[in-house]
Image 1 (cartoon, rainbow, N blue to C red):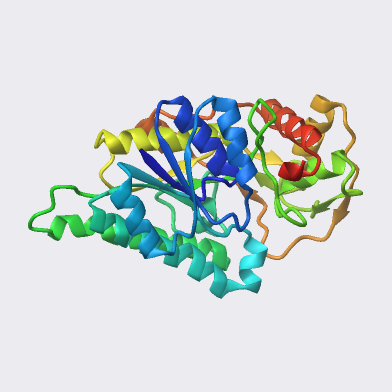
Image 2 (image 1 turned 180 degrees about the vertical axis):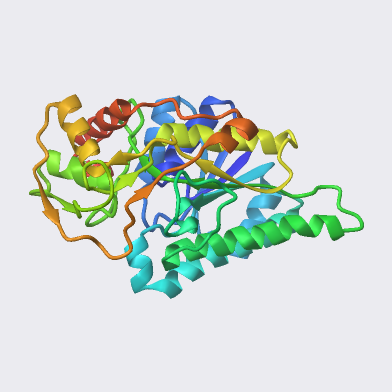
Length: 345
């Protein structure tokens, strides 16, 4: 059985779907602070399998101890956390408490229970403003916002935890930890039943595009058209959420087979840079839906170009992205069109 914290969220639901389809038993722990339990109903509908769900907080050590004692958990995939860069600048203490403290408590409870296989949901934001692209795992880390700093602090804690195995005199179960640094998740499950359902104004490009397309918003603001990129707009590495979910399952399998030991940082991205206008035009052309937009001033902290070197993921996990940009925009639109109000529908 695999414990998935934050399993009702965007990436969590897609990963639970891949886990169930791969034959794993799944236990989801989620407090639904930025997700919906209805999403897990959809996962069960897609897979025709059931999962166990517990409503609770990953910062609750008593609850975690109970779960580890009562269920045959072999490994943990840890998604639970806040994820909005802008919001992290406004309420940094909430981000440190939720993102860092939850992982500290979880790790302590795992250690107590003798469970030492962990897939951690990290982020490419740990790199900060890169001097060169593509980004490799060996490049310096220098996050530019509290969200990225919480992810890097967790990585450092988990690396210290894994390194402590070398000093242990009697440690029959050394730690195996995959620190998955992913870039810009987009898309949705091909069924159109699960997808990204942000609360309030979307923080990310794709849900903003789809909300304009479905008529919830008047137009898209494109922040800056004077970057040193082919069309002047920012370039990012967009990865289909199903590919991302597959990456988590493949990392889990390598951990369970002891092919990954210690703590390994691994990029999950396509290795391809796509500009904002490339994304808008691809969405329009593939879905025959207009997306009105206007050019706005640059946002503070945005960089011109940001994309991955995913070769380590291929070498260590046998993973590479399979979905195309066309898949990303068509699957995103199918989800939004079928669920204009998200899971509230």
